Image 1 (cartoon, rainbow, N blue to C red):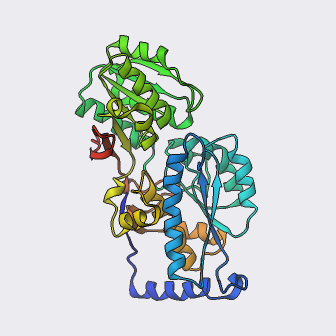
Image 2 (tube, rainbow, N blue to C red):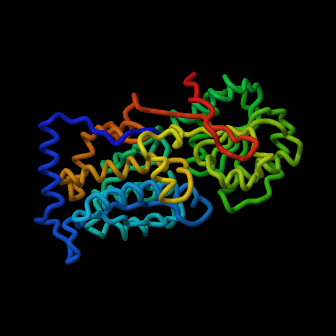
Image 3 (cartoon, rainbow, N blue to C red):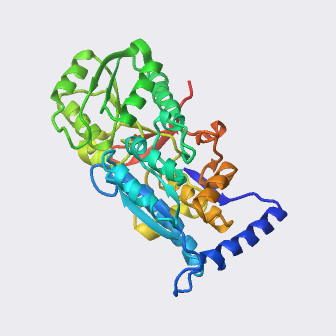
Amino acid sequence: MRQRLVRVLGSAAVAAAVVAGAAACGGGDNTGGGDGNKCDVKIAFFGALTGSAANLGINIKNGVQLAVDQHNEKNPDCKITLEEVDSEGSPDKAPGLARDLVTDSKVVGVVGPAFSGESEAANPIFNEAGLPIISASATRPSLSEQGWKVFHRAVANDNAQGPAAGNYIKSVLKAEKVAVVDDGSAYGTGLADAVKQVLGSAVVVTDKVAADGQQTDFSATVTKIVSSGATALFYGGYYQNAGLLRKQLTERGWTGTLVGGDGVNDPGYVKAAGNAAAAGTILTCPCAPASQAKGSFVSDYKAKFNMDPGTYSDVAYDAANIFIEGIKAGNTTKAKMLEYLKGVNYTGVANTYKFTETGELDPSLLIVWAFKVDESGNVVPDQEAPKA
């Protein structure tokens, strides 16, 4: 999550981009209505804006909105429309919403889907329609293994995050007995499985719980963890359940460390657990701290939304700007945008982005950080997670 909006181009490439940008935003096939807007294309956000996972979705949507609004302010004759799709993070609702979205020929790129489960449900529809997507947050490894030509991921997947979390537990916490619990979701199970592979025999208890919003009493899981003698717990899932589980563990006198993935890295976790119980929690993320994003991103975000950027806000900002740069270069159809993404090499405020043939971020650009909840309930950077 740190980056500059700088693309390194030779003088010839710059000239070509300017000419192409003029073509894209200066009339012709993209002439809009009578408001003077000569660009008539859209970028969509697809993710949760309501429901139990809304905090994370809003972080991402805000990053996209900031990028679009900044572009429109600088280019009043070539405005891009942001289409917001509230999936509630639901795999059941995602397909219908995706079908509706692909019927809009003006949409040339999607930032999202935000979550792995809804990605599995919606991505086949986006792929069939040829609509390019860049997810700033969906981390299940198998998403890049389905042959979806439209799929791109702007962060590391769980094959990087899971081992990093496991190595933190092993090398930094030095825990000899570990509990691993997940919520049964595509995201949570994948992350938990990766952690278990790293820790091996140190895992003394495993358990599954229901998805966020479907369970509030975790007494059975708490009993298993407390009786196991585990001094660390890895939770694969999202922030609401993790917070309630941490609260109930503390109430039972468990003083170990909860470690969670990026789905737990949200203020909602601290709210559900309470500051005292949440303090000391370690949260991993396939991203760098948004507070360390390059350029004026942090101040611009705070000025617009009256809050600090959250998890993936900066990555989403970069993903949106990748699409915006493509539009400025004349890629104003789905097919042209998809071809453009194949060769993209973009340096943003959070990272540099190049995609492999399967849509993964280039291996040389992968990042995983650990964050810690302090005594005041703030999530602060801890360290880059160990690779071994």
